[in-house]
Image 1: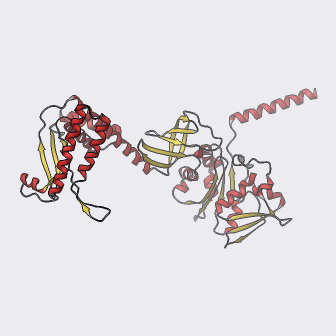
Image 2: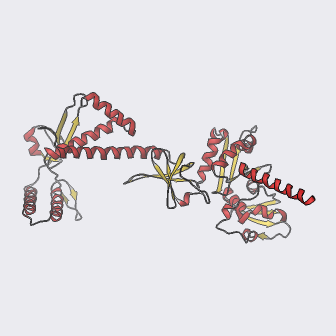
Image 3: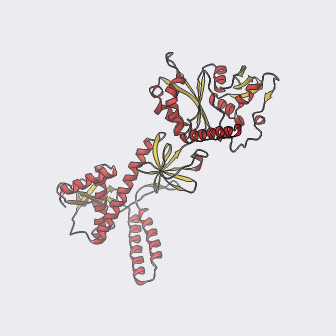
Length: 467
């Protein structure tokens, strides 16, 4: 294969895998070095190869760093280790050692060799030297090659390629190339998705493993664990969903992505995507509290007096907000107006209930809200959901007091028969107010058809009764 063909192949690999040409060329050089070491190299050689794409020629070198000479004692210790190496080889050949025993002794012997020479501070404070004959060369030996060499220089010795690589060397080169390209591809994918951490991505439900949902994100699959799934939301293979990329980690098996459908940020990101005034910072999201699958309260504000922040978020006939609600599988959304005054902000957060009075304690950051008896249930909401979300949204601890009796009310006492495990999935009734909008998803055709059929049946029954 000539240089131009190899260049074309490298460009194709780079385009398919999203890799840089430098990383692919480095992989080829590493594979050639491994193949040379397999067929022609020695254990004490630090082999580096370079493949010239233009000429197709392979250059191979043994590269070592010049270090200080070993002392006679260190040389003797190194010689002793070499003798031990030869002894265990002979023991293996004669059958005195099993392959497992040989491998264990060889590893111990190599570890001992690497502890000769170099510099290291021991526990007693004394410095000992290390020497690795594979990557280092003594100064006296380096001067035999070239007298100008000094400690710290790099000795680059040309090596000859005596012939073609054998089958085993070619297999080694192939394994190195496959492994390095896979690692490079994983790193590219990891970096790409790491940069998108905290963003919304489009995914396709690929499969369901136990309680985990596997979502295909085009280049890689992500995990949607049970605690990140919306309660009572059902996922079917082939469904297209938007997910929030919560975390990206690099493991030994490659990048691992965790996505979420319950994270509060997914609502914020959807508002940014669907509402231009929020995207260009004309309207600002001041706060958000969410119970995934049931209800979300979001506070918005603007400095432009000509813009209605709530109306802009809802859109013409609710077009904008309905898109967000549909993406969240019918989750109700309360849009309220933010206020710098805590009393006003708390009152808005509790809408659609009508508040009589709000008294705050800035030191303890608590608020006592007085409401008429007929508004008590609406203020608290089902299983305390309305007041709970309002408290999280504003950051104030809210207590409810009945106007007529003057007694504080326990939210749990209002809905004693509500299952606490299911309270998040039971929304309040549809409400509308001047400073707040609670949006419900539109009725489906199936619902409308059922209602029409019911009305026809009732009308027919009434006719028959009259007859």
